[in-house]
Image (cartoon, rainbow, N blue to C red; front, side, top):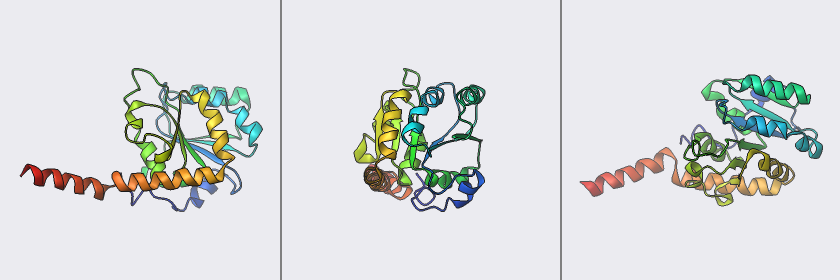
Length: 207
């Protein structure tokens, strides 16, 4: 993980202005390709309870893919055009800005035999930026970031995530605690420098 690029405190004012998001609006951010197993259809379908609890909340989906037409249809049917923003693909170098814009970051992938061992690198990026993260419990990521001690709250499904997201949006203290824990763990274990040190040790031992 490039912790020089993905870090807390990156100026996000440009993307905030681009998508018309106000300073006082809590933002839930998802970044990634919109695969059919993204789980976003389920999450968006259950998004109204979030708005009931936090009316100013916005869901910002940064990415594109085959599921986009379905997501657009759900957004339209529920009248969420002002609350859910689909940005399409954005330049990689702007990802730290989008993540730093977030109040909470999410990964909603459906849990199945197909997805269980996926490693969504974006979760590492979320955590490296100091963002409290809610994700479905894929074995591919829980082995590296096992829980709240590493900045991540795990849920069994996108629907179950709704309650966890609401709880985090209502608790700035818990978000801060998760964010600080995540940054500490990620920079201490998975930064380029740390991985290089480990590789040098392995090579020296082999020699």
